[in-house]
Length: 243
Image (cartoon, rainbow, N blue to C red; front, side, top):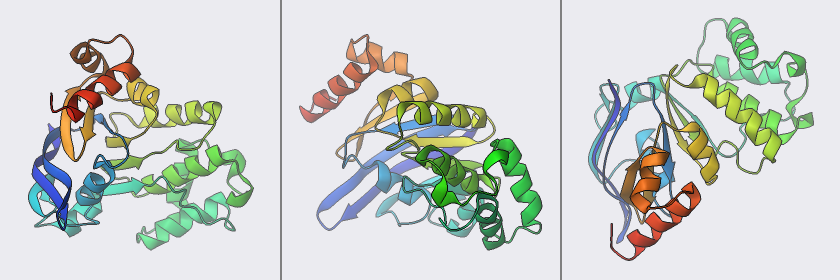
């Protein structure tokens, strides 16, 4: 079943085209990677899909809801975890979770926090102020906050940015546990992360979709054994107009 259907999605800022006629389908329960160098159009695409900015042309339908015609309905079924760690530093982990639950009008914020704390194994840190936590723990709490509303579609924008190798791998485990429970769209600059986690991967450059498939399929397309080499090859071919 299709969770997201994107047709001709375009965003222009004056004469500059940030996203150019994007066509893409993402399956329900799929963990889908969106890769590209800086300025490729990834963040703009996510902003349109999450109704933070309006498309210039085209549309996207998320579980039957058009971002153009039903943005309020779209917002009810999605959540976003941004690359900026969105926690209140002077609140404890539990207070952060309950605060977000209250903002979203959840009837029992304490029970909602209990569930997320259990799901993310946050018990040992639930009464600690978030400013005292490591970057990895703060990012873990930030993702937990995004999930407290039980979204059907989750956008993870650079979730492990700036984390050390061990913290990044720990967060991979958290993300893997979410697979199939919801549809996840992941953006990352860590290519090994996309290769390890994603069911399929799309590569964008200059606002256009250049290639899409599993990591293995993309390596075959580029004629490379290493995924990073495959990404570079595809990006360079696109730059030469060969894709």
